[in-house]
Length: 87
Image (cartoon, rainbow, N blue to C red; front, side):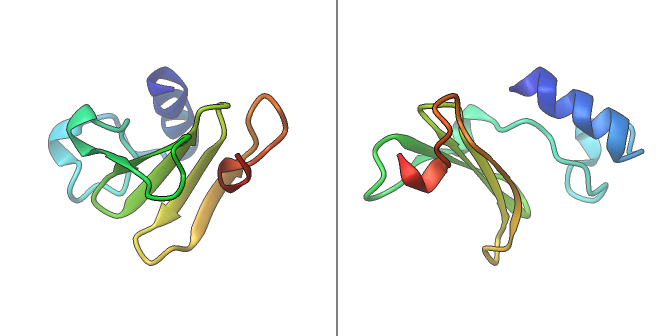
């Protein structure tokens, strides 16, 4: 996941990889373990919090990225075709 996110950001964001600028450059950086949280009522989903986003990852590989306000930016089904909130 880390490699995929960095590859997509390198290709599509035009913002250079520089973790020291994470607060201001607008680029998505990979989630950090210290920002990992359980999701109540969804034991198969893990939430990673970043400055302006929440990334939800399902045990089936599904991914959903939301703004802090809850606007969905990306939704990808997992290996079984189900989205994060369907598992």
